[in-house]
Amino acid sequence: MRKRYAATLIFCILFSMVGCNHIRKTKISVEAKVLKLSNKQFDEVGTEGLKDPTMNDFRKLTFNFKMDNPPDTSRKIVFPKTISWKKSINSVDGKVRYWGGEEYQQDNEGENFALYHRDFLFYSKGLSEDEIKEAFDSIVLKVAWKTKDETQEEKEYKVSKLIKFK
Image (cartoon, rainbow, N blue to C red; front, side, top):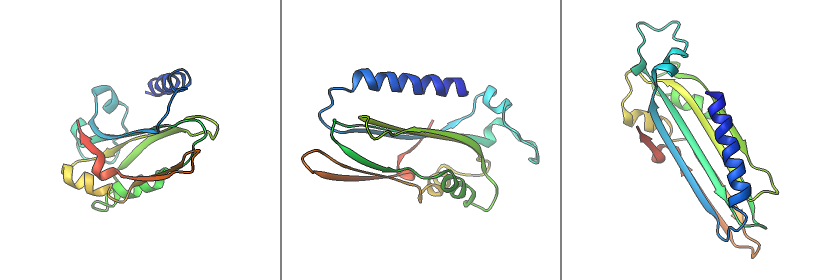
């Protein structure tokens, strides 16, 4: 699983270095998906302490944010910390639902792009799609940027509004 993320990160970095040198306008892409686990993923999940766990008792949330901006643009991105995601899913009914995950980011000041990625597994048994969305209502990504002509822009992305189930 880590090899795939490393390969994706390297691809994004190379693509950004080659393909983003002529950006004239800030472009933002953001997505949040809740996915079912594959057999292989479920085989890697530690299920100790659960009564008769099945593959359908778990889901994976994947969140991706990418911002491409013209040169001479300053940006500030506030990406929710791991503990926020963990508290959100665990707050649904008081059960421990956060099962572990990983994140990476690349947001260097001199570059014309920023990448943020988070994914984690959670115990979803007994939760509806609405309850899952509601759990992430407090998770907000904030983005602000200023162009060389001093134009200031800001956006907020509430994760609960972005989640798609697949």
